[in-house]
Image (cartoon, rainbow, N blue to C red):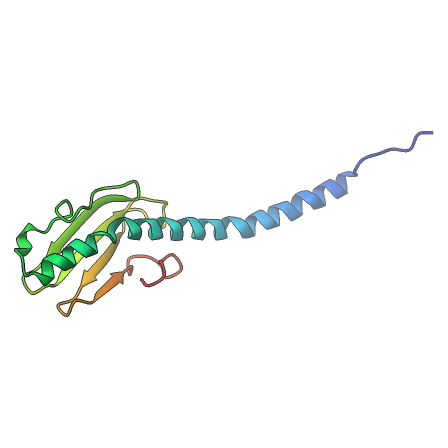
Length: 135
């Protein structure tokens, strides 16, 4: 009589159960990682506008000219719309409406300039676990 080779049904079921448990843990972590990377990419898309806006504010140029296009920003894969505003007092914002997964889709990521020249990142529209460092 020949000896049977292979796995039993119970052994295969145990392996499938272990894979299912690992997938249930990994999928939410992956979704968080994707959302964080989408926000970090969106922030890197609007950050270059700070330099031009800062120069305009420092030189007291006409703040009515400040638009996203004027400071060199445009829509990207990660920012479905971009806007920029600067008041005569030097207070301004650069905003990106994020195009990404469900957790970040359609929400605004904003860089704010205070009258004293300090910049802050406002990611309050997003859950804290998705925000890039410094937001």
